[in-house]
Image (cartoon, rainbow, N blue to C red; front, side, top):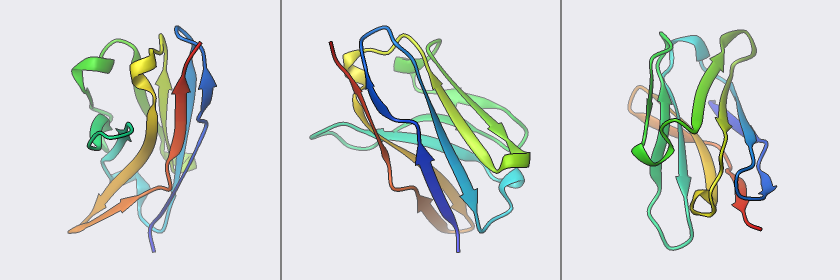
Length: 115
């Protein structure tokens, strides 16, 4: 059974930084494309960043240049380094992996950017 466990969220002032972590179990992590999504109150869940098994990355325009996704295959962990945070980054952040036709999500971690 695939499990994803996120950590690292919290309250930060505008301009601050946070690093989210997501540890995977139950699948061969190194061959999987991993994603970070977020969902703000009243909004649909949106894809924030993706990293392939080969290390290629992609970002939504609103976080380009501020967020960095990375992975450590030895630790079965994917990270999201978030810098220059803005109030509009406030959301629940979810880790995601697709295995065959199945989608798996973590429990989510709250990120709040406020002064």
